[in-house]
Image 1 (cartoon, one colour):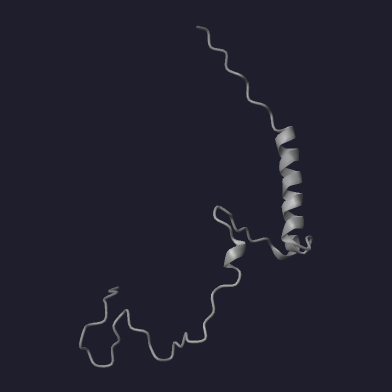
Image 2: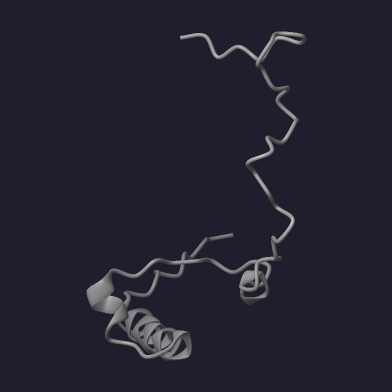
Length: 85
């Protein structure tokens, strides 16, 4: 399958960097949710049944922190390596 670029001067063709008239961005607005995603944050999509358990992102984060604490507490500790010098 050939994914060639539009040929310059071809009738009825549009250059790749030219915006078609039907794409009107004159009333476009910046993404109002972009500021919620701080640098270094990770977006996780919850299944609907799981998301229904929480009323807010803060509540979900609190539950995940509590679960992470339980996991860390019950995880076997690594054996300290003893090197003889």
